[in-house]
Amino acid sequence: HCLTLVLLFQVENVKLLDRVSPRRSRVGTLYLTATHTIFVENEAGVRNETWVLHSLVCSLEKQAATSSGYPLLIHCKNFQVLHFAIPREQECQDVHLSLQRLSQPESYEELYCFSYKPNVDDEERQNEWDFMNLKADYSRMGLPNAHWKLSPANRNYKVSDTYPADLFVPESATPPVIVGSSKFRSRGRFPTLSYYSKENHAAICRSSQPLSGFSARCLEDEQMLEAILRSNPCSDFMYVVDTRPKLNAIANRAAGKGYENEDNYSNIKFQFIGIENIHVMRNSQQKMLEGNYHLRSPSMSDFLEGLESSGWLKHIKAVLDAGIFITKAVAEEGVSVLVHCSDGWDRTAQVCSVACVLLDPYYRTLQGLMVLIEKDWISFGHKFSHRCNHLVGDPKEVSPVIDQFLECVWQLMEQFPCAFEFNERFLITIHSHIYSCQYGNFIGNNQRERIQLGVHQRTHSLWSYLWTNRTDYINPLYRPDHSQTQGLLRPSTAPYCFKFWRGLYNRFDQGIHPRQSVEDYLRTIQEETQQLEEQLASHKQVNFKLPLIIRPSSASPTAATQRIQTLMKLSTLQPEQKHQTVCVREAAMTKHYLSKHHHDIGSSIQSHLQAPELTCTFSLHVVCLPLIH
Image (tube, rainbow, N blue to C red; front, top):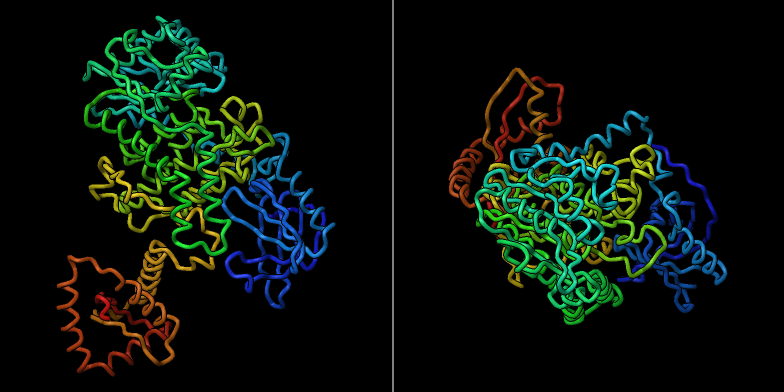
């Protein structure tokens, strides 16, 4: 599409400093437009450009003048850090003030998604939004059925303005019970269905905390939980999981809120799971990032001590532990679970969605993860614009809640590399666009606000973009028929199983981590293989099969043989154990054959590769040998 930029001003001879190696600093021109900050290198013959959306800017930091100029640090929400040195103080001041205003919009209308105009018509735009169909997901679960129904109670958002309009409730839940329960729950967020297991009828439901105080009770709320229990004919009790630390929940009683009293609710088992609040999580991530970024070359002890003192991985473990508890309750015990925190849109979203990933292989596919985020986060009213700081507002409302969910999925991918259809790049792209405001999916704090803003009519959908470009996000290790892929995931949460997510937090530090990922290597193999198959299949008349070992040649090979050699090098990195015996035996036979016919075979192959107009073809069988050091 064509992007029209309104240039506000430009600054010449700006240095973009490399935080790891100052010698790699670049000189260029800094442009400020209405939507982007753009740095263009001045080096002759080089057109390297660095683009940063203003909506991705998290904070700005002016530092004391140096010999390079007046430093300005731009910290971004996608963890990019740009260190500029601007020649003159007044120019630095102008850039700083302009970026402060541009990166802190005061209204939704100023966000990038409302000015982003790819070249599509209104019908195509509507098709983008129609791609996501939550009713199809509930239908996949077997809903509605004899136990659960689609309730019209929240149409026009008259019961809870932060819930979606369409909600599944127990078949026996009457409108008076729904309304009465909503009045006894914070923000009217009454218990409703999030996930249903049609195999054993167990359900995951979600709500906010009850307004119970020290002794208050509500008959309709008790009837609602009884209806949830009866909707599972295979169990005579249900769990109520409060994801807060117990002390926090007790403290909320003084404000007239709190948690369920087991004496008032029949056949429930109450469970506290201590996930800290949004303020603790915000401080934890900030501390982790400070230890990671503020030192130019941190020692091993500096880095590990900073990571440990931040407590970040401890919080990731807490979210995973909660998801595992719910997964076991549903899959192994066949028991329904009601999950809540304080308002039911932060920790509740984390825990329900992690449990879904563990329970259901569908949510481990590309489409499934998009559906899950749409259902448990966007639809159920996670406050994206507050938590992700889309608009200028209360900094205490900002918290990396969605970051933690995406990291939980990544930690699971590290333990089960064959169980997920998508790769790390998919998670990182979603993370970037949650904060970029380029698409309308995450704008606002609930479904009602997005309808009022006309998001579907005025912006574009990220899900359609990701699906259109899905080949970029496929995990080459994914095996649909694998036992991991089909079944329940049972991860370990032992401390040594958790890793620092370098791919997210340090992906812009190319000087530190220039290596290509294993997934990219495997994708290269697949692409090379496909190209070779297409080339060989294009010749129809002569067909002979030739066992061949490709060895690096000192001669200057053709482009085709270069691709074959690259394929051979990559394919021998980690041969599967079960094929080693066959490969070695076939290699010995091939070596013997080549020793007698090496010249004839080599020349015929070279002439074939160099003369694509020939009509002969052969089947190429690459023998994968383990590397010998």
